[in-house]
Length: 626
Image 1: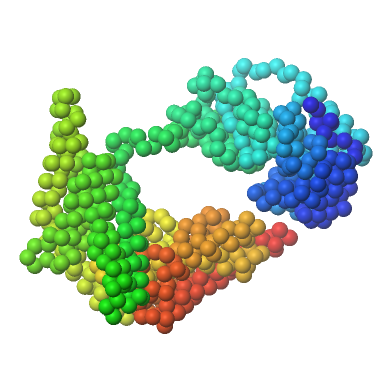
Image 2: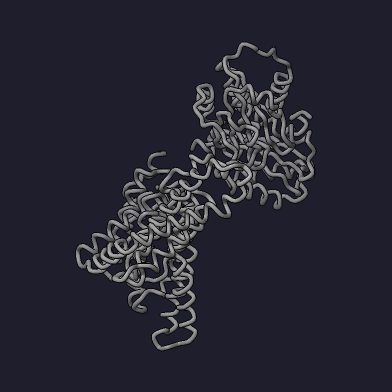
């Protein structure tokens, strides 16, 4: 089906009157309705606007292609509108759009219709074609330009066998109508100019076209996957693969192709095989092993800590039986398992499943076997960390020691030899080192509890800055882990400090997007709305979309605000037994309503500091545009 069968004189507007994005969408939809292409104009307009909310269809280069598949479409059609002055369409390149093609596809549109609609997207990548459309003085000239382009594309072209590189690509967008094919056309045209052999597979609404074969993949130098939706990736295992968004293939085509030619990309490994990484890889990474333990321990800490806090709130000190029950569940059961679980999962991260049992046993010894002079809580979190790593590496040694056994005994290794020797060795070492570890742990806890005044405020400032520095990364996790360790030791001020500071980055930047709208893009302002909720829930990672767009200004702002909150929390001597929950656990702050209000005040002040600093540092986008 030809595009001129979908684009007709009665769906063309040579001089749009609209002055805004909303107006131009309504004006072109009115033209489609006037031409008899719609069953329900308002329903179609709603579908068009819903598509725009997903991502802008202003693709840059003065072009916008609003589109939707809708039950309100009577006959599939294309409408064209042109604005000489240009309209702000939230385009990807930030420039006004002049040429608007609205694609109306019916829900039951067949492949012929969809291919014709998608074909138009590829035509618009040709600068000469765009210029003809822009210079057309009549509707007939617009149709003639489209018809001439179709004849040009349909004319076979001799292939060039002497291309220097063999590159493959896959393009895909969520709707599969416009961006998928525009990216494919841009890749093909740019590769042709650069003398590069390329084949592009499109994953569109009408299915996969130009599918890459196994032979082509095997012979390819590199593969570009420009997709905003899921595509079949396992077939590219072992090949250099550049993964990016479909928009990058349209606007940064030359850079992508240069990277592909230079094979500047990692060798792709299917995600399904990530759990089957080599033994050497599974043994590396202190941070990875630690986080495996901490993440699996957190449910025990969070659930147990909040139950303990609720028991105090409920009235455990007045011998309330229900409060005692909550305290027993949270403290004697859930919290008791915290350190053994930490150690068990650290060990299993290092040595896989055989490491879990010795890790659990080592962690249990850390909190229960302390020697004659040891404290009742043993070496706590410190002992658990050491037990986990000890058990993991002991298990690896045991596995290596029994590697030479006959195959007939292979089944006995995981059920007899590994647990017997790794538990025994780990247990003996932990029983020997736990008494001195206990003295170190209790001494450190006593020292921190004895800190006061300026020292305590300074520590709060440092912990607060750490929570905001990398927004959920290793530094953030180190500060949070320290807070949990002190919670385990019975000091509740540190976990209160790190949680308050961790809430500030998303809350502060969300506030900045509300107060200083002209310093943030529409996308960033939308991210700010989400950051309010994430910050309130103590999800520091909620600030990442804003920080990624402008780290040089956002990170100093968030670090400063979080550091202020950390210092204030320590100054106000806030204690909290709940290690997570954000605003939902503020009522559980020790000391009643007064302390809870001070806690809220510390968070608000830090958020305001972050917002004001971001507002000062970030540039005024409206002024820059002018």
